[in-house]
Amino acid sequence: MTQIKDQVAFVTGAGSGIGRALALELANRGAKAVVISDVNEEGLEETAQMVRAKQINVISRKLDVANREAVEDLMAETIQTQGGIDLVFNNAGVALAANTDTMSYENMEWLMDINFWGVVHGTKASLPHMLEKDHGHIINISSLFGFIGVPTQSAYCASKFAVRGFNESLAHEVEGKGVNVTTVHPGGIKTNIARNARMEADVASARGNEDPGVAFEKIARTTPEEAANVILNGIEKNKKRVMIGLDAHIITRIVRWFPNLYFRILGFMGKRSNKELAA
View (cartoon, rainbow, N blue to C red):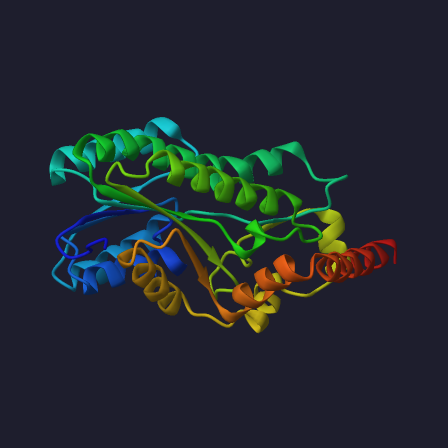
């Protein structure tokens, strides 16, 4: 089992949502120190104050996970000041709504730099240290969309499929070397990711005045706090894969058991989206 009590944890995307909930629950479970980061300084400071209120040592730094050097520097600082890193949660992520044919390379690269390369940076910056001391746990956040392809979400799905493949390969590579690896696949979680998503003009036009954040919250059934508990319960048991939410469990089963039905359902969604754009 992976121990949380008296461990040093590193959490990206901790300014809100799952990242904040993870930082607080790590504190509740007796972590020695929690290192939190985000590009949102205001939200990050709020999280830091909440963790400090639990009498837990917290290091808070503004960090863009797309910046490899910055990630490596913060990892090195943590190892030096805290004596090591035991748990790494590569959680930072963004969203983009765009049709592939009109999607800008700029937006796709922005998303991949954070969702995929941010995970790679956090993993590679901590992995040699963990292998050297034969101890550690890397937790990388994929998504339900790491199993299914969804219209207007080709970039997001690509990033989350990539995290899944990267992480599952890594798990095999470190087997028996004291390092555990977990891939997390959340379904609909009540976070700000949809509200803060980029949306290209043709998709925005098709959706009219609909607020994507409000629309997402209508179908998101799981709170960040519930998600954090499921994640930490899973890593305590050294699970290789953690699914979060009834939607994630049901849809991934449909994909495995009824692949043709899955394609028909998603195909219908794509046709409806195209009709809205044409209108």
